[in-house]
Length: 446
Image 1 (tube, rainbow, N blue to C red):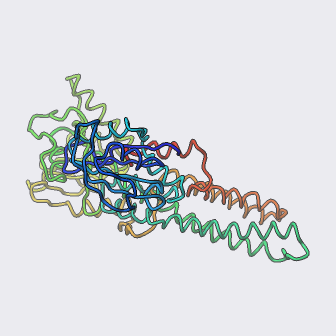
Image 2: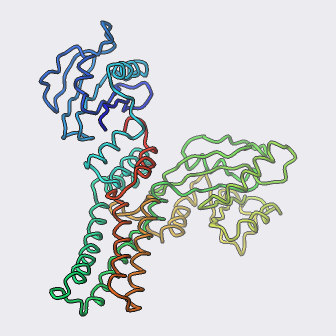
Image 3: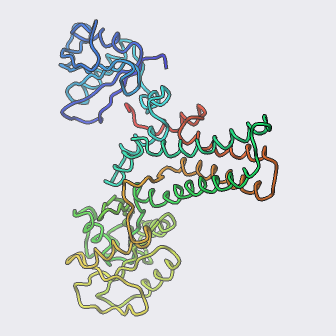
């Protein structure tokens, strides 16, 4: 925390502007060593024009954004060097900053310093990475809600209720003359049940939140030439997968992320399932079957324009018990396949028939027919969900103690365990290992 760190804050690609971020107690001193202008007496939140130099050689024409402590992202002195966005020039400026005395930042170290310096809590820090990696409008809005401190506020309220009840018990045990515990167990029971209910509501949002932000892993399967790759191309609105009339064209899995009417689907196109003599195709078929095990949803395609084959029937049997939607493809052609007794959705990539019905069916399977609003506070992080589970379990033990009429000091042990779990969730009680684990997942320069 006493070092001054630096990293490239923009993507490593040619672009209009590149940004090298510097943070730490010597930020201005270090940048002043390589800047053509004079930063002595530079004001905070001002932009300065000049050149970055290596000895007497000009590297680039730049704008410097100065943000002095504590009014910066990290709460430290921060200097952002805005340069032309070529990869070479941005790297040269970073190397020059490092040569002038800064240290290369670790992944996520800027946000880590913001957390350690108290500017943001751990849930807000995690939401920064969620915002960067958001693949849908829902994920973006949900990350912004967390970044605004909504989850921190909710958890802090629950912690406050627990701490108040625990403090009363402690006071009553220390000073029974002035604190009366008569009737308190029933009052505590009602409070614990209410807090536990609110924790349970947050936990119940996890699966829906995860699927809305990470996407539903959806495997497209079926025998060769039933339209698997055509379906993927149709939903992507581009020719991503090769489509031919030759069976076995797709040899390996192909993954793409698709946003479909608010749904985020991580689509996996697989090789056609059949008995293959070609060893390469056989590997593809094996991989296709293995994808079923990790899938949230299987789209099993059946060619409705021809009779069902034994391979079709075998696939229907194999996917029974899994979250599967049967699609009768090529519905724009005369229907020949006998699909009686099967819950099948007619679909055509030529006419678009079945697209809306497919979306509705997925919503019914995973979201009770209705997508959550991004303004609803949801848990999308497994770490947070596990800590809520721990807090809920501790409160269940409090209720057990109350039902069994145990002494009051038994309540305090489990109340404080719940309090501790919630404190860890928002980062008020954390170990170095946890902090390192959370921020190691961040990108460089953030």
